[in-house]
Length: 265
Image 1 (cartoon, rainbow, N blue to C red):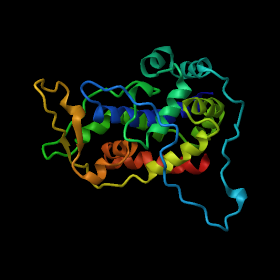
Image 2 (cartoon, rainbow, N blue to C red):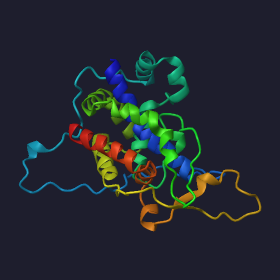
Image 3 (cartoon, rainbow, N blue to C red):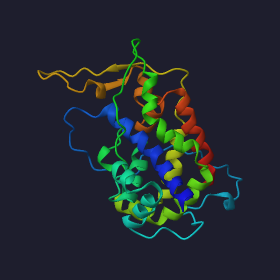
Image 4 (cartoon, rainbow, N blue to C red):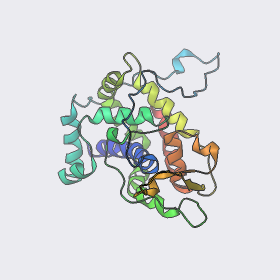
């Protein structure tokens, strides 16, 4: 149980660190009410298979569990996490209420322009976003996510895929409740991973700039109002912008892991 539990934690940590950093990047001083999630998924470009490809090669819309599925409900997942990491760690780091729903919503929102913090499966990453004197993202920002990335480095993608298959019944039910009845979360996850793998690579941290905010009250948290100077980068999705923000080396680590995971799903 311990290795599979670690698999779930590390996979969720990747998604959550993406969501957490996007929030530090984009949250306004007085957040407006979050809009309801649209009933149709955001289109993600997925290459069509060649016409001659055999139907048998197509990935199933619902993965079969390698072992007994995790029992339905939050309690079973919470108990597994506590058994591996201890109650104090889980209570400090995890949002265990509606855990499967939080994972599903985070995955579904990564290709969008914003990832709502109220939907995360774990708590936000601590620390502030910082910029070097030349306006580029400071390398020190990546250290805020070092612990999650160390977990990722130690996790074989095959074990992450196996635990995902055990948790899949809960994830699929949560996806239907999110507003996608009859649609496959498995297909959505694979498409979102493909979308993240299309993130453009950069050789050095991109330049950013503060968004001007007019008004009589000065900003108390200016570091949350940065945007990319390059319009092509700024128009990327929330998940892709965050991957760029991790820095070239750490972005490559996450993408290499996702690239290895993708054919196992």
